[in-house]
Length: 242
Image (cartoon, rainbow, N blue to C red; front, top):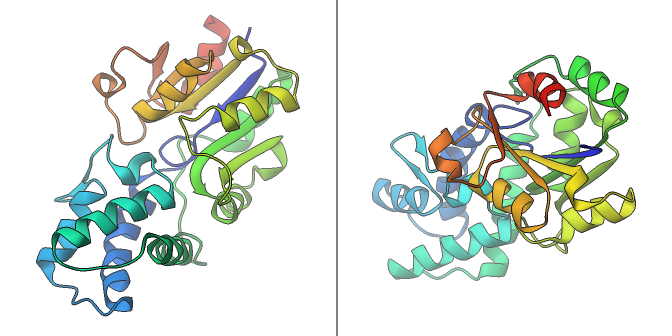
């Protein structure tokens, strides 16, 4: 029986593409200029491909889809070194986190939803399900998003990149959630839109529920998803079936 749900954020609770695709294309040129590097079209495209964005498409297993800012910074610095440019990973992480946060938390940022979130959250609470978030995004950005869509009060746990937590699929957030609410691994479902989310559930003994509302198609989950649904709109029906 599912007693706790760990939701991914982008692509699962809110639309990934309307927020992060545009953010990436806006941030990369600014990042280059901030480091005194010419933001040529060739170099911008090189870095976008490095983080998994090419011709307006997002690679479901690319960095932007699931990695933390620290991991993205490492990838970007390697890509820059290939072009004879040098930026420290520490500085790149700091700048990328700041620039992305400014972009996705700006006042006019729009969070497109897949269902009536209050209705969904109230449904889950009526089942006595503990609700958590496990995201690669920063804690500030994650809380801003939940607050903006009016559901932060429903979340019992927020696991995000605070500079200390290890990112998914590491066990840290999963175990933190399990221990805090005395849940067994098999009582926890992970709901997410990437292969990484499915591995996060699988390797920690949880139930993997893939959603097709984000960057992945069903085939992208491999054989790691226990269940696949179109979006979280279908989650109550799936819980009834389970």
